[in-house]
Image 1 (cartoon, one colour):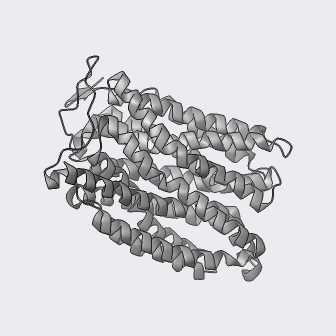
Image 2 (image 1 turned 90 degrees about the horizontal axis):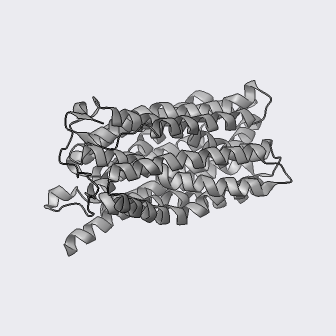
Image 3 (image 1 turned 135 degrees about the vertical axis):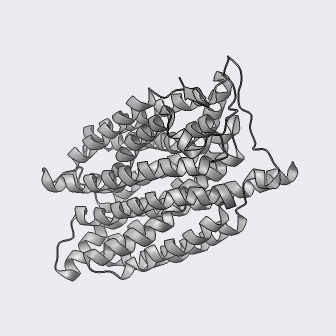
Length: 430
C-alpha cells in the first residue's frame, strides 16, 4: 500500500504539471492577443482584429478536441506517460513556431495544429489518470490538487507577460519562445514521473464509493458504445458544453472586456483577470475537499457530483451579471466577479469528469471521457472564443454582447445539470 500511495502521488504531480502547461496556453492568450493585434497590424500593414486572432485559438481548440479522443484511448492501454511525451514536442512547436509568423494563414496553421495537438494530449490524460487512481470520496481532493496547476499558471505567466507587453507589444514573440522551452521542460518531467493505471500494478483505486441511503456502488464497467446509448453521458456532455461556451469566452476575452468596456489599462485589466487564478490556487483544493465531503454525506457519488454541477454554472451566471453591472467607478464588482468565477472553475471541469466516472466505471473511462471531450471541446471552446471576438466587431464595438452570450452558455449548462440521472444500471438508467 505504501508503494501504491507513492505512485498515486506521482500521478497527481504529473497531472499538476500537465494542467499548468495546458492552462498556460489558454490563460496567456487573453493577455497576448491585444499586443499581438497591435504589433502585427503595425508591422504587416493589415489590421489584425480580435476575430482573426480568436480564429487561431478556436482552431487550436478544435484540433485539441479530436486529439483528446485518441489521448483517452492511449491512457486506457498504456497510462499517461506516452501522451505527455508527445505533448511536450507539440506544445513546444505550438509556441516556438508561432512566434515567427506574420501572416494569418500560417498563424492559424501553426498555432491551431501544433498547439491543438499538444494541449489535446493534456486534459483527458490528466483527468482520466487521476480518476482511475482516485474514486468516490477521494477523487475531488486529488483532482483539486492536480488542477491547482491551472490557476498557478494563470497567475505566474500573466504577471510575467503584462509588464513586458506594456513596455513593448512586439515582445509577444519573445514571450512565446520562453514559454515554448518552459512547457517542453515541464512536460518532459511530467512524462518521467507519470505512471500506468492502478490495475497494471495490481492496485485498487484510492477512495470508497458511498453506499448508504440505498445507493449502490457501480458494479458495471460500461463499454464505449454502451455508455453512449444512455442519457447520463449526453446530459454531462450538454452541461459541460454550455459551461465551455461561457468559460472560454470569458477566459479569452475578459482582459479585452476590461480594456474596452471599463477603459482600464492592460496592467490593471490583467491584475483583475489574475484574481481568478489567485483565488483558484486555494478554491480548487478546498472545494475539492468540500465536494468529496458532500458526496460522502449524501451517500451517492453521482448525486453529489450532480449538485456541484448545478452550483458551478450558477456561479458563472452571477459572475457575468456582475461584469455587466461593472463601471470604472465600481471596479470592486469586477473583483467579486473574478472571485466567483474561481468557484466555478474549481468545480465544473473536474466535477463533470467525476460524475461520468461515477456512472460508467473506470475500465473504459479514457475512451468514454475522450469521446465526450471531443464533442464538447470541438464545439464549445472554439465557438465561445470565436463568438467572443466576433460580437464586438458586429455590434457596438464593446464586449457587452459577448458577456451576455457567456451568461446564456452558463444558463444552458444549468438546465442540463438539473436533468442528470444519479443512478444507472447496465442496460438502462433512471
